[in-house]
Image (cartoon, rainbow, N blue to C red; front, side, top):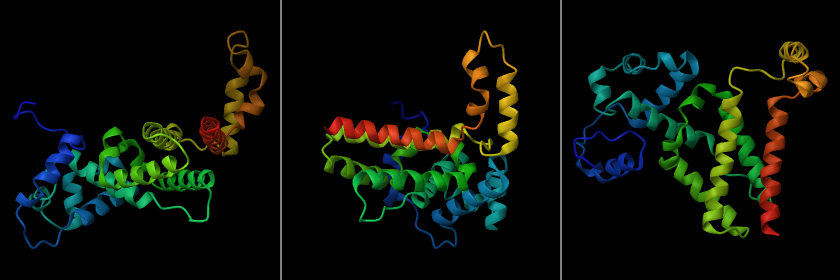
Length: 236
């Protein structure tokens, strides 16, 4: 890699450089901390939305100068990577110890989905690079151990953990801004389906009432059960 090429925040190269250069950073007595900055950024995302989260707005919330803020994070991209790591750490919790593996995975999937639904402003920023952050790696380490313990190979365990993470995040992202449980939304969907060309959309028209009542929660439960069933089938 050309030394002049900027390293994209959140990539493996970025996390490695951040770790290797940690001892070279000047140590100052500061009121600001990365945790405080990340928590404040997440608060702005929750209350004001993604467009409001600028370095200037964040500095206002922290009651510091932008120059002070830039001594901790060099760009908005870097800020978002650190904030998402903080968010993942807040959203991932160990399951109760008395659960079997299937119930444990279900508990974790529901817990993380509930966290994302409560903080929808985070979801558009959860991309592949966030899987390399410390909080995500801790979650991955737990999941690897969980799936290896039931008999999957290391590669199978990694792919399985990734599949569940992708499914949970995707299920929330796909339904952002849509309340499928709303009676009004369901009525409008039924009207939309019923008004389609029956020659082109015969199934949607014929089953408009039933399909319009399918909600995102029901879709999530079906998909989660299908993933778990597939793992059990592989273990036989």
